[in-house]
Image (cartoon, rainbow, N blue to C red):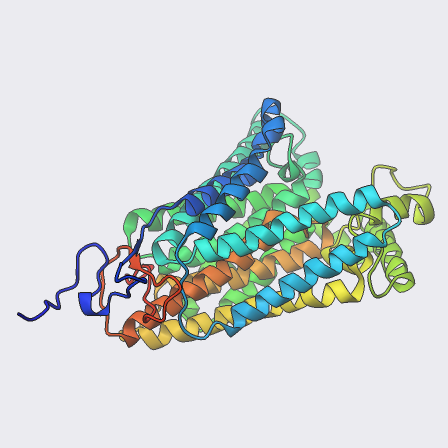
Length: 474
């Protein structure tokens, strides 16, 4: 009696191609797992700043507990290998090098308490990169993750827009708002208008590209709302770095080949619309950037950057140590005319160079390079799998990640946001999307045509690799 070749409903793979575990057992990776649920929970913890909002949660260390459970879930999950993962390995090496150099730098830091506090914070993000990149690694999980990510950013955006509108509606000083900006709430790192602007510069292009690539009407409507809200968030932040990042994002989006006209219209037309609505004070603030010597904020930042470069020159290899910019600046570089509360370097580049030196900044820059390279490789794999030659939503998502990282790198040049969630989640999503594409490629090679369902994964065997979800992102 011959073995049937119909794809089994649970996994979508023919029985003859279903990889086996030792002893002839077969295992299917579910959509939901402990690790995936905990990664989503950690996303909520970081973007909602739950411990900052609810003080009684502080002793429970919910962020660390959630990430620890996610790591445990990853260790208990079946392992998957498929295709050429050399770029992922290089990314891991760069991340490990950054962690190692930061550790050595902390060992030689003058201010040990600040060094180890910052190092633990950085180490947490390295763990998040590794866990989230290996957990959010299938089409369905990427989709769920991005829906939650958009909802959390939408919540922040609408709250700041409402605060801005309320001030304008009830006779508040709109000119002062245009000059100082509005942040997301009163607590947490998004409360600062500049930091909030960085968050919007990351979320805005992702929403725009998902809008262009999505085929389902209800999701297209949702992404359109997000796109407009995030643009409004950039507006109310009044951050010059965010405005510059928005302009660079729009320019890069207009140069993309896929749906060139549609992307150009969606992004480029946003700039004149935003400038038209901006109060005169806000426009004057943007123009003042060309004459930074006469602008107080710009002058302070220039002084901080020069101080950071001098610190780097004195400690070129390992830097001052994580978290040592502020105390060193207070002790040796402070200008008595500058507000004593100003202690941050206000640039991710100065932050990296001054605190971890060249040996730490080089692997950091390598991670940025590998991120763009990996997204390009992912698009190449997706194009090879797409017989209709019509870009899938995953394809647009990688374009969105490129633009989001660009927004982070441009706006981050003016703010101290190196250890904020944006960079590390983007790096993880780049790895996860690459693995998802390799899974689909592996499925095509073994001739498996599945539905949008769970995957079968080989655990420590030489069985052929298969994708967790063979359906397209869109």
